[in-house]
Amino acid sequence: MDNMQDMGYQMPYSPAAQQPFYNQMPTMPMQPIQPMTPMGTVTGITTTPAGGVQEFPGTTSGAMPTSIASVPLPSEQFGEDPVMDTEYTQGYLRTQIGKKVKVEFLLGTSMLVDREGTLVDVGISYIIINEVETDDLLLCDIYSIKFVRIYF
Image (cartoon, rainbow, N blue to C red; front, side, top):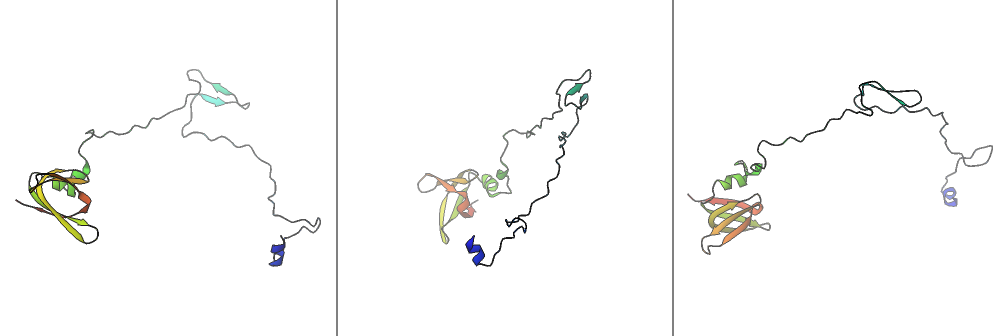
């Protein structure tokens, strides 16, 4: 508190009691809050002033209208992945399976490495090439591919 007075700050005081004066909100009488009603109203049920529930004949006690959201199912359950459409690289490469290809990959920022062989399979994030020299299967990352040469 002494530091505040040293910096030129003075606390406002009430003149009558020489105590710090704080802004206080005036107290207002509280009014009862009406409960919110759900989106729809229940027909046949009314509340009485005493807080009880009055039912009319032919209604069920506590019946609330409910709606259950259903999840639309696609017409083809577990159909083809949209990325395999020919507008995407994976979809186009899938149409070239069985053909001889030369694929160039970017490693790092400036190094290009190429691999040559027969395109065996195409997935969402990979391609598989059957190399010519070794007859091995080579799994390649599709996201590092820069160029693909397809031999006819």
